[in-house]
Length: 153
Figure 1 (spheres, rainbow, N blue to C red):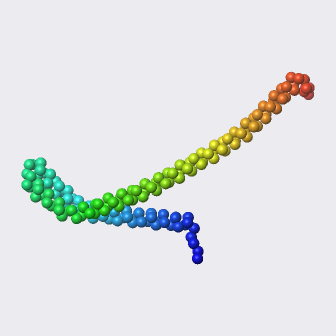
Figure 2: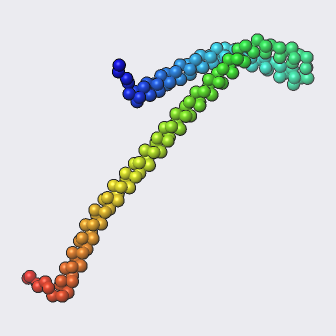
Figure 3: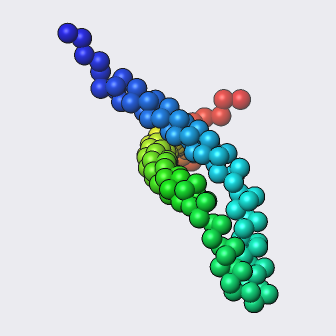
């Protein structure tokens, strides 16, 4: 029996999770379209209720507010479910972003260390060559000073 490597299974589960998130977002978007159909009427009921309250007609405002009952089914449970779904999607997305940021931080640190190593290596080679040249210059100056090198002209 063949077993898939864990890496393949993990990658596939992430792909499935992303597809599920897209389906959930599409469902939420569809729900908003349904809710937006009732929005104008809902707002007009609110305007009528607020106008009656502003005019001091409390009984008219109470009667107007009873019209909100027909929206309770549409806006109550649906919005609660949408808020829950959005909260879950937000939590999953936040976890994914944090995981990617953590990976980016580790990779940045690793690249920084590699760059430091390369820089130190280049400076070590360069300084070794400069020091060797300076030592040769000092040795030649001492030889000239002691008269060990004759003028070849």
